[in-house]
Length: 126
Figure 1 (cartoon, rainbow, N blue to C red):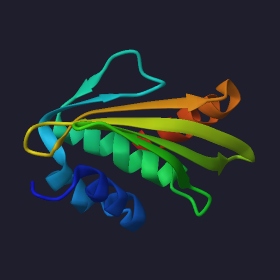
Figure 2: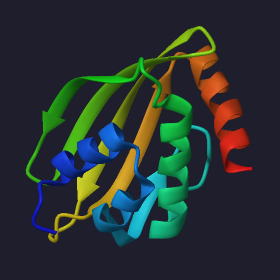
Figure 3: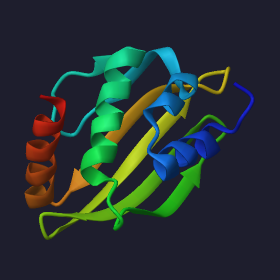
Figure 4: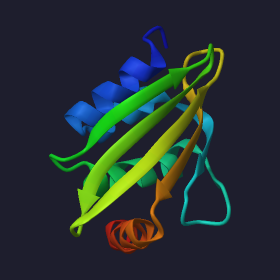
């Protein structure tokens, strides 16, 4: 992948097009959810979680408010609203030498908002 992984991620978020994930995700990508104890491994399951997250959180209110980068990782701070609650979170993204996302970790606060996210994600993944 020659494109900047962060630019590719922002394109996915802007377009909400699941087809874009295939080029972004490494085959052995690891997804870490704030609601699931075990890491989820593999492109298919990660794409499923990320697509559901965009359905749940990707409303008109969704916005990234901060970005911190290293050579092979980025932390993206976001805010949105769900069920009248402000959701504040971060996406921690690491990529491999080919520029594909190798690890994706999500953290969400406050607890009441996390509980709402968990309920909506369960419905989206059902």
